[in-house]
Amino acid sequence: MKEINITTPLTDDVVANLKAGDRVYISGTIYTGRDAAHKRLVEAIKQGEQLPFDIENSILYYVGPCPPKPGKVIGSAGPTTSYRMDDYTPYLLEKGLKGMIGKGQRNNKVIESMKKNKAVYFAAIGGAGALISDCIKESTVIAYEDLGTEAIRKLTVEKLPAIVVIDSKGNNLYNIEVSKYEI
Image: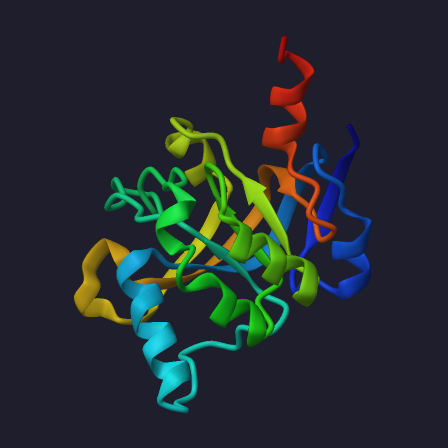
């Protein structure tokens, strides 16, 4: 297991060198989006509309942050369960999305699309939203403000900790670790 500092936007070379199990610290610009925002993004793609941000080589963090406390830019910002975005994710990968941060398994359709489009899936630590929020230096709602906590935000992050769970070749840390303990 390696520890790697990466910055956004992601490139094909960086993604290709990330392996399932690597620890990463992400710095730069990332975007947030959950179920309702994903539905709108895919509707926009299907209608030939432009997306509200440049998705190419970007990372989407599946999070619905809490309101910020005084003096903070954002509240607790822990990952949400990723499978709820699975029906939408291949559309976004086709548009150039290179990374996703969430928690839990992805379906085979998403993994095949990740392999085809050279993308990576990171897991953030569930239950550590307050600690993760300390890595977020700026937060701005950029689209779908009516969705409240599920609006799309542009975040500036410094050394946001995550683990590569599924790499661009389809290696899945969840499956690798489970297989070690099967009888």
